[in-house]
Image (cartoon, rainbow, N blue to C red; front, side, top):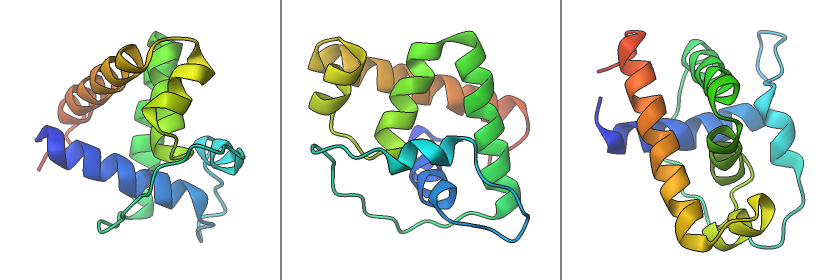
Length: 121
């Protein structure tokens, strides 16, 4: 699984989490998407995922949250709430560069996790 694919997958997951699906399942992560934040980034979604894949990514982010809450929070703020690095840095009380580094670390962790559970292409 390439890092770029994982980033696109997370973008699609962010969009998927905000929609109501036919499974009767409401994404645990989707609630964060409703946060009103002034500094949001423009999100271009060109990649769509199935409910099964969306649930798998949701579970992966939950596992990440159990291991490192700050990394999971960074993922949620960036991909669900669509915040900029500047806004994320204020939310988690770190510098902008540290927020960008945390996001890269979180995406890398999720990339490896998804590879291990067989979701690699």
